[in-house]
Image (cartoon, rainbow, N blue to C red; front, side, top):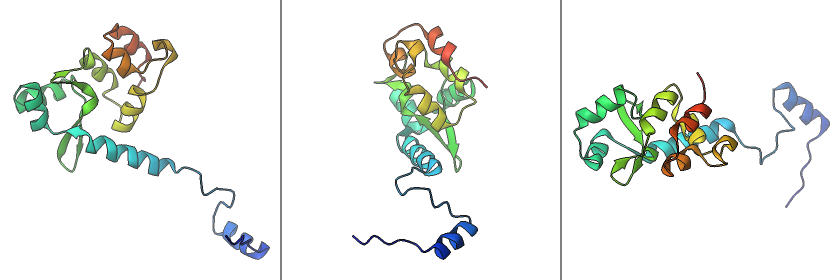
Amino acid sequence: MIDAKLTDAEDAMLEDAGVDLDEGLNDTDPMLDYDTEFADIQANSLTLETLARTLGMTPERVRQMICERALYAFRVDGKVYVPIHQIVGQTLLPDIAQVNQAIAHLDPVSVQRWLTTADPDLADMTPLDWLRAEREVSAVLQVAPER
């Protein structure tokens, strides 16, 4: 490996151009992280039709639940995506409708991050794990991000 150092003139030219020379190669890029998480959420979401088949209901009923904010969904290029975290087997996660109404204002990445981050007010459980354990939904609603 070659240890190439820039000259003072090269450093100055790059700094004048707006390059942050203190930024390390191992630093994370928040926008890239967000885009990667969004792509993962989208790839692991269900379409209206697939969700309707899974839950044994019509696509129209799924659309109605989305309109009521009982299901969290997002749209990309005209296509509706429903994140899979709301489903357990062939049913909806208990009390997810109440939680979805409280977080409907959030983007999919913020929803995913919040649902999968342990919270000390939930006995260090994530909101998703709390709901899966069928604990009192009011505790999750109390720690839900505000508008």
